[in-house]
Amino acid sequence: MASIVVAAAGLLAACGQSGHPVAGEMDVRTLDVGGNSVDRFHYDTSSNGHGDVLEGIRMAAAVAPTSKIDQSLNYGRGSFVHTEVADLVKYDGLPDLAKPILESHGFIVAFSASGSDRPDPQGSEHADPNANQVSMVLMRFGSADAAKATARELEDKDFAVAAAQNVRLTISEYPDALAHYRPGVNTIGVRMARKDFVLSIFATRPSADQRDLLSLAKRTLDAEIPSIDAFQETSADKLDTLSPDPEGLLARVITDKRETGRAPDPDTFAIYHTNWMVHAVSDQAQRKALLDRTGTDALGMVDANEIYRVRDAAAGTDLMNGFITSLGSDFSTDSAPDKVPNSRCGHWVNDRSDDAYRCYVGYRRYMGVVYAGDLAGAQKKGAAEYALLANSL
Image (cartoon, rainbow, N blue to C red; front, side, top):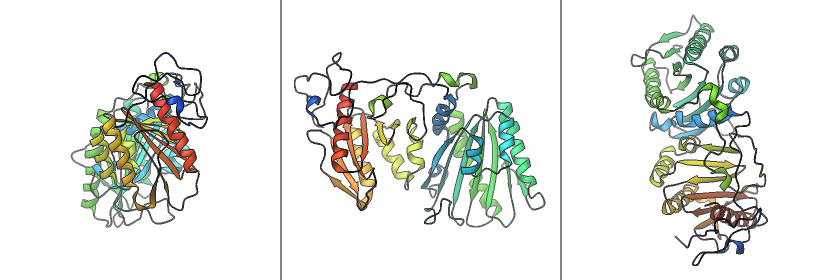
């Protein structure tokens, strides 16, 4: 790796490119950072009343990627955090009848993820009806009793919609799992309470074979239940003690919205477990292998920009190169920011969007990714991200 940039401790100004160079290290004040703030920064430690959002973001650790269920379910379809029951019903496939049940039992937050063995049909937001596909919604409640009551009521109400056609099923290894299917229909639904959670599973297979559907449901539970058990949930009365940036990871990402009391947001201001980095990619096995190899243990997102924490500097370079390789032939490489070591840039071919260009910057245990609508903008952001990391560590 090229020489490391470090800003002298204790000499950070209120804004701009701060720090004095140490012998043998670059002076980050010489970098063209395009007016971005690159001095050390800290966000408030308070949840600002959004502890439910923070818990939902944390719950990515409790939802295993679908490739862990079955190697064929390698195509990630994304994941979501929902604090509103209406959104959960609208976007995550729960029936309308779930809304009053969840509300009456003190629903707190949900994390959902799904995966398939093939891409969704072009122009569709739904999985191919003939695909092998699993969707999971993990819902948090205030107590184990509330979770158990919710699981039972959800199953009973859903079953009753077509009681004459539906058939209840059991999974011997999981006696608390409540399942049913409709003969001739290639889907199975499962609800299971575990700790303070309810796991809702909706799975499809190419054929409506009962044994096949039950096998997929069992394998889903085999992958998911250990993840739920390993997850350390926050007590319902302690949610607002959670911090959006407990280790200062988000403060090491450049942004034009430096607000100390910024509220957490699953899409624009969040720190995620590595599961989240796998849920949405088209080759989950490849992405997980890269994350494992590089010792990546966290992702921070601030607006459109990202930061990854890895094992060491060499692992950061490996992660950078792995990401670029995975983008394929539609991604073209460009020149790196001037004077910034361990950096690479590129853009999507024939893409004119405001995030078509990106630069990757490695520094010690961190690898940042910044986005812009043109190369010059991406290069300046890349230089700024490097300077911010140097000034922050």
